[in-house]
Length: 171
Image (cartoon, rainbow, N blue to C red; front, top):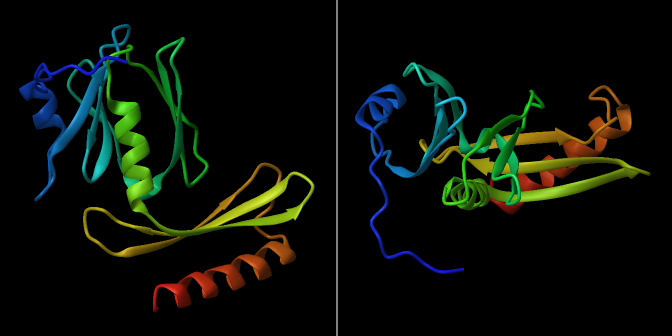
């Protein structure tokens, strides 16, 4: 893959205004979806989307992003959320750096994580993640498919894992 030394195009001022950058926040990458006109903006603190009308439709801090997948063939980015809400999807084109930025920022937010095996095809993930805007730690339990939050074994094992993770970071 060739590296371009060309300066990237600047984020349009109307999109920048709609995002409303906070103190210390800066744009790392962005991409525009040709079909809808939506713009996806990745900052050092969060992921945003602004629709073609200039309205901010998404603002999620990095610690709320569970992960993302990039289809190079379809030039499509799919983003999943820690709370299990419906994934977001954008067709950004092959030159967008948003997928790489997403990967780097999600990884930067993870302090410690532990995967819990609950049986065949039953997993959960327990993590301590940093709010990259404020610096505080956030505890998370992300359930795999088919795992119920009220499962007594899950509750016991995730709480034990959280205690362990807290001890590892001195909480």
